[in-house]
Picture 1 (cartoon, rainbow, N blue to C red):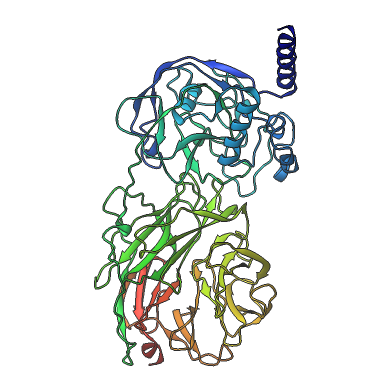
Picture 2: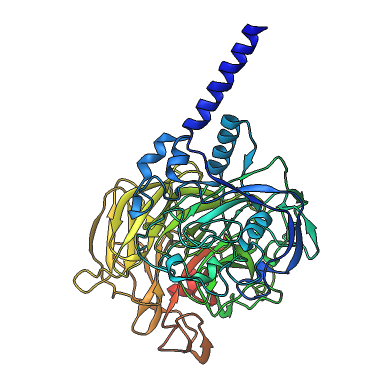
Length: 616
């Protein structure tokens, strides 16, 4: 018996010694209570409503600050290599960053095993309840934050390094620090709409695509730091504006059944293969119609609708997407979509296509693969400005009715990831996707390739002259690209690559350079020639090459000569389309359906014509 007592005593001492060696998060007690969750701000912040009563029925403990580098690196020592990246979080007691939701969850599981206690991430309701600490104002400090709690609270193209010391400013009434700003914090909930009813210990929807983050961060406008403000991110995402804190409790919050919502571009989508007519030898021109049509439901729709992409669907529909925003660096930016259903004369009104909550969504592309799968590639920002984007892909096998979960294929939030419409399939199956290499007008285009049908991507490291580049494969296997800006001898640059985009040579083309509010299209037509849709002094102009870009036909204006005034949208505005003038600006995207019809969209308008019409 004495030996047993001795062994137990030794074991107890070992456990105590092990715990004392850990750098444990300091926990504070959060009492049960009831509060009003959310806000009635509406507009961009409408996801904060409806305001509803929430009861937290049990005591729980929450870490006084965000988890620090020192605490996290006991779990993952290799994370120390990320300290100071970009000028942030270099100290032991700085909030840990560059941690995904999965990383944060793994830390909670590790800490629970080490301590024989139950640690997890807070639910969104627990987080807001703990943050408010009995207050009903925007912040626990009132309607404003004191200066010593502000960490460059504005959108920056270049993030300004600030201290991420986890214990800073005034604590709230529960003794918690850093609930407003410093870094966003992962919560356990899947992102979804609030129920319009009172709830007890809610834990969010039972499934979803994005995990909630709360609290806002450095280099973010102060409105995103409010107690009620909601953001979200893909669970695998990680960057220097998200960290986490933990709670200790044996209680699990209650989830509810996820109720997905269908948007107009994904409902009543017919399946099966369309029967396409053979390409006609007769010229075809159809007057342009708008594809950007304001929504008829509660879809967010902003003042600036721009940068479209388009593809055809196997069922005969056309699918177009674009961003809608008030500011190109805005976090309100959404990707909207519209469908021109086979046989319809008008496009559907706009509806939501893709949105990561509170993230900038600049840059989209669509491509129909050889088996009919539609690939969607999009940029996703870390916060506001569109300089720092990651690349995400999704796939649809049913004509855009449903989509796979988004996957981070180039996960670093950095330059070289602003997706441009017009990816191509090379003769050997390689996919090539162009992206702007930076936010400036002369930053050029980066080249990204995939050899597994878009599942994984590689940045070739090359940068060619001209942003917003269009690209084609020549018959000899080389790539050819034209871009905007970086003029050579006063002409638009043309670039060539013999190694799938890894190295390039560039020279002056015979075409005039294009500028602000303009984006070209370079496309191999089904009939063989290469079409360049660009801008001259008279507006939108089409050129054809029958000898692989060595020479080009005389340009043809994209006009019927009618003299009518048309609204071009975005940066274009109203213009007159007559015999001598076509649309003067616009961001082009293009697809050609199997019947030979060329569908070219600008920032608002859908043009339809065919090769015989260009050749007239």
